[in-house]
Image (cartoon, rainbow, N blue to C red):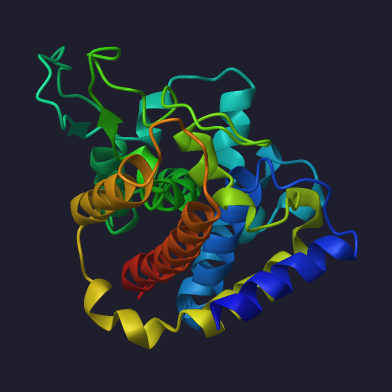
Length: 285
């Protein structure tokens, strides 16, 4: 089943939909999670989500971007325009210290778990104004994707990096396309083609439909009601098992590791989509 999924992804690349998988997570990956969610919304939740997206459509003049799916990239787009006040919302660096190194204590603060909780609460608060809900929805579309990326939930402590390796960004890998563990997972290890937000309709719906077939929602019924802190813990464990513990000491990326990372990323994107739909269906009853 997963083999068919990889073949399907490759076929899209061959017909010229995209040019490079180097930045797949940031655009294709986020839009896949959003499309998975959109396909699983109730009619009422979909209508309300569409309405709220349009309230802030002025922030995205391109008509192709004024939709639930490409809006999932909006939070990275405003970061690229140098509005950096939301930077800490994207991650939580849970310490991973396998060698027991004396570490620099990082004070608790704003992180992806606390902000995801806050955004969900805003969507479900009857007192929240339309603007507040519209803003919360746009941020949530992105952060639910981020929290399911394993290296948005970890920081490895070592002699070289006593305050952590910044979510795998400082742990190098030897690969033609990526240079560190964080980028390896961000790129889904080359599994997906890079589809731009302007062209999302040419590939994202078909990829998401195939993803839903490969990873049916019924397989995860017991995982729908979990808390954002649990999602982060899941990601943390996966980062260790399929990232730090699987990477050879010389940093050389093996074919076996690449396949494992691809599988994990596909599962996390699908699960993130289902959970996002669950949140919105409950928020917009």
